[in-house]
Image 1 (tube, rainbow, N blue to C red):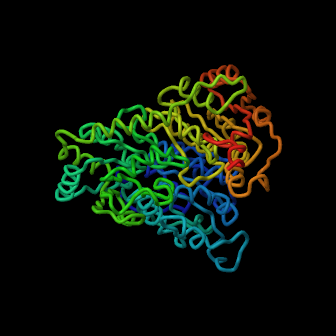
Image 2 (spheres, one colour; image 1 turned 120 degrees about the vertical axis):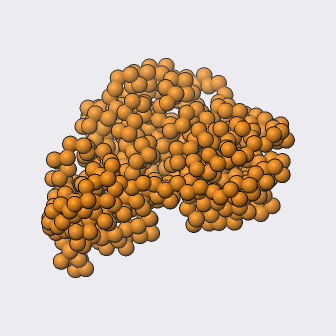
Image 3 (spheres, helix red, strand yellow; image 1 turned 60 degrees about the vertical axis):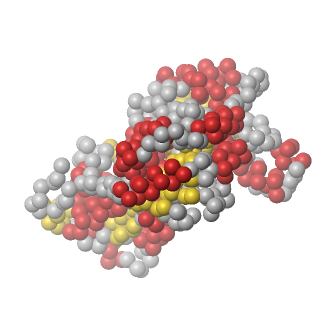
Length: 554
């Protein structure tokens, strides 16, 4: 609904909050700071917006990023000047690499003090330019509606991403006449009919085509359209790195996830393909295995909403700029391969994926990662949302957990540690009726575990599983590969996460058997309280496929 056109006289702070309200923002994450107190005061009087005050700016920015992924709305986070801005920059970088819409409001020194190295002053525009879509400092209160609304437009259109808005302290107090435009309407460009015909032509000649589906499908809410297109043409689907919920993993046409430590047989599916349809993916380093699995001999059709993505990693034979829902709508209407000759090949590749993702029975008396993943698969509701931190423990999730419904996974393609639990808080606020479970290692969890208190304070009932092997496991794995027996900097001390959880009035459990884990997980799913489940892990089992002993023997 378009706001009234007549100008109203108000403070810069009220102008910012009016923009938030007009854009339909319901949650704002922050660590409070004196440099933007007028905005906090305006939020106090705005019942339609809930303010979530975190314990650390990094946690707040991860909450906003996770909220944006789960809700499809832009995440909004606020912090103060240089120190708060530096702390939240990890969430900005994650939003940038993950193509997540985010608007970041940063308090700044008084505009009269800019350039004098005032208290906590940093040139915020220059600081954030390399990891944001746009960064702007507002020096005139009257321009707040124009520039804040532009920030929301840039964050959500094209390839989504983070936008930084620097707010000098005095600008928030000044009163000016302000006029507000209509909320952002996201354009959805479509392919031309000629481009669709070329896609059809390539598919008609194909013998082994495959789809690589990425985050652009999720941003466009086009998962159902992708499913219909794949089914109509018997096309196999691979998910890009940490986009597994883009296509039901139990579907006969799903043939695997292109991530870290991907099974060689799944990678062979890409290598054997003669036509690749890259849909809404930037074909990142991880997805393409260090840019190695796509060759010039293959035909590459690349569709993405942002022109700069096309050809960034691989030169496409056909590059199409389009919104993925619009593109798939046209492709569904125009493309129907009558008798696909690749059906036997698809069955072969599906069998390869099934063999790679099958968990062997595990009757170990002490709890194992295999048992945890099996329990999650069996005991969680089908629409439960999983978030994860960075770490080798995620290899079990990516290799063996089946995402069967859309919008059930929130993970950092940036590989940020400390992400899983605060992102789960954001996801739970976006989807309060869903069970939300975060998976973390002890290294990553320790980086943001203070946000458990935030979960308690705002009554956000997430389930946090911490795999505790008392080391930085991923780095230890690489250390043992390159410098076996020479352990340097990767050992960690003893931390009782379950006890710390209890100390902030969350539920905390330490489990070391399968039966205990089943009991505690069942209780956590039903008790509607923030819960930490600490699971001790065998240090030797360094990854889903290898032990430290294996690495040292090599």
